[in-house]
Structures are given as C-alpha cells and as structure tokens.
Image (tube, rainbow, N blue to C red; front, side, top):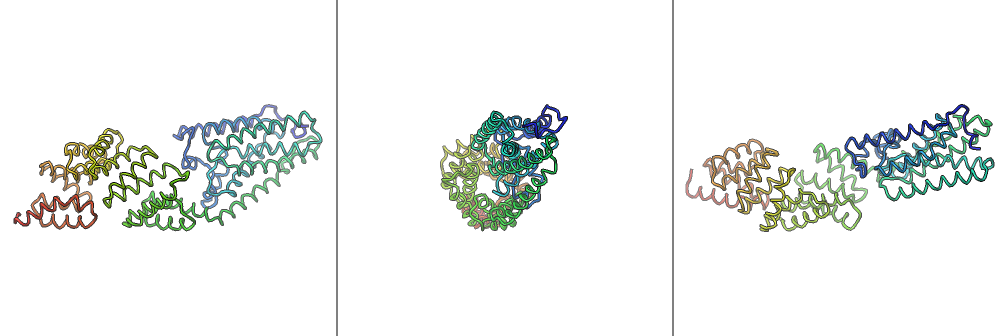
Length: 500
C-alpha cells in the first residue's frame, strides 16, 4: 500500500511541496523584477541569476549552479508547467516519505539532473526544476515496481496514468522552450528511480515505519559519482575548453585588452570555426591595426553563419562589422549592401545611420538624406553615428546647415573631440573661421588628430604645417586622402603664393 512509506504522525497537508512551489515562483518574480523578460530571457541573463553551465561549474568552480539552477525558469510557460507537475507529484511523494526525506530525494534528483546535463553537454545552458520533478516521477516508478505485489490493480493503474500524463506534458514542453535539457530530465529520473527502489526496500524491511534516511546513502554516492564523472569528462572535452577560452575572451574584450582577446580567440578557434570567436578576433585585430586580418575573420564568420540557424542578431552584427571595414577602405557600395542585410536581420536604427553615411559617400543623395533624417529624428541616436553623417554631408558638399544640425546633436549627446573637429571643418566651409578655430583647438587638445592639427595650422596662417599634416593623413587611407584633397590643394596654393 502507499501508506507503507508514510512515517507516523506526518501531517496530511503537503507543506513542503507548497514551500517549494513558492520558492520557484518567488525566484521567477525576482528575475522579472530585475528586468529579465518573463517570456524570452537571454542566455547571459539566465547565467547571471544562477542557471547551469558545465564550463562554469567545472572550470570556474561555481558548483552552486547545480543547486540554484533548480529554481531558475526560462519563461512563464516553463514555470507554469513545472509547478503544475511539482504540485501533482510532489504532494503525493511528500505524503509517502514525510517532509525531511522528501526534501532529500527532491534535492538529490535535481543535483543528479544538473550533473547529468554537465556530463552530456558541458557547454549547454540549462535551468528549471524539471530534473528534480522527473526524479519524483522516477521515485514513484521505483516504488511502483518494487512494491507491485502490494498494490491493488486500480491503485497501480492510477499511479501509471498520472506518471504518463505528466510526462507527456513535459515532453511537449521540451520541444517548445529553449535551454531545456533532456539529459537533466533523464539524470533526475534515474536518480529518483534509484531512490524509489532503496526507499521502498527500506520501508518494507521496517514494516510500515517509513523509509530510513540511511537508505539514501547509495543515492548520495551515485550523485557524487555522477558529479565526478561530469567533471572528468568536461576537463577532457575540447569544446568545453574552447567555451572557457571564449568566456575569458569576452571578459578581456569588455576590459579592452585586445591583444589578450586575439590570443584567446585564436586558441579557441583551434577547435573549429566558431562565429563568435571569429567576430571577437576581428574586433581585436581591427583595434590593433590589422585591418586585413579583421576583414578576413568577419568574412569567415559570415560565411559560417549564412544558411544556418545561427543567431540573426549575431549575423547582423557581423555584417555591420564588415561594413565598417569596407568604409575604412572606401568600399562604400559593399558597406551599403552589408548594412542593408544587417537591418533586414535586425532592424536596429543604428544601421540606418551607418548606411546613410555609406550612401552619401556613394553619391546617393536621396537615399543618404533619407537615412540622415531618419537618424536625426531618433531620440537615442548614437553620437558617433550623427557625427559621421555630418562629416558625410560635408565631404560630399551637401547641406551644410543639416550637417551643422547633426554635429550639434552629436555634441549635445557626447561632446567628443571628434565631433568638435567635425564642427570646426563645417564652420570653415561655411566661412566662420573664428568659431571654427575654437572647435579645432578643442579637438586637438582632446585627441590630437592629425587632420585637425592641419586645420588649426591652416586657420592660423601656417600652410606649411597644414600641408605636412594633411599629407600624413592622405597616406593613412584612401578615404582621408579624398576628404582632405581640396584643403590640401588650398594650403599648397597659399604656399605657392607665399602667404604667411
């Protein structure tokens, strides 16, 4: 009978199950209150609140994730189905075992599921109470098998019907929610099954006095063994080591340690072409002056992702990164194409501003101005994008009033040396030399950019220094050479005329 596992004097109300449900719901509400989406939380958000990932558990020694991940859920649907399942089976198992032993079995099943997840795929991110809940179903199955000679046919049928119905719901969930881990489900179920076998055997031996805590020693040993096996396999898994290198590379990237980023991503790429590693290395190489290497990496990343189920956001960022490399080398048609593809994948307004600059430089006045006005109307438009558009209008000899409006908006958002330099050049073009000189002096003080140094010298009547600076800028890249050409010609004319 089911009562064979029930300890004497145990309350009939499933208090512990109620507390477990409350803890899971409270954890979810706290996640939502912190700004995490209630329907589609991101990977980094899940990891920040305690989700499970083998590389963090093993390499970073964050063993607590095996426990905390049992209370983290991936959206309200995931939470609802798990809590329904927990209430349905948990109340039943709690009455069978009593509160303390029930908590032990629940925890061991959850830990077993978490370590099984690490064993199967140490790179995977997983979360949820499913491992522990499948463990409770496993426990009931172990009991039903071990005590089958004591159960009336109707009771046995009721048990199996309940198990199969709730398993069907969880199977549906497994195909509808990302980050769910069937290895965790299986691991939890196996640990629960073992717990059910030994607990039932203990209860039968004790003749109705309930299962002894010592019956779970073998289950504890099994969970520890699973944890050790998961750790050993992760330590010897090339993909896990690559993922750990990528984690360190992203931390180095945030700290702008680009030499370290390049070294870490290069090591990670020895295990295969990982798009994110290629993109990070592309950024690092660009920052370190290796433009060809940066372009090669981002192109390889795009080739790896196109035609696959890769993240649209990551692919869009790769197109935008390559567009930036094209713009530096004056390949504005390619930049326009890449930014249009990026925008189709992810309609980020920033891509519109970047595309507007490319179109202006291509001579597409209509398309460029349309993107310019769209960007200027955005409240959160990036200051550097606004500055680039202002420069694009100046360089192509278009609406200087609109260019001034753009650069003033850029300075209002972020008074950078680059934006003050752009405003200086626009003011010179408009004939306002005094206002221009103040901006150029501020720009040189802030960044000492060679083109702005040339303009200061030009405005202060030192054309020889202006020529020297602008010739240096012309050697830097073809875009700067084209931009400075008319000013360089004017400075040389002053020199030829013997101007002071």
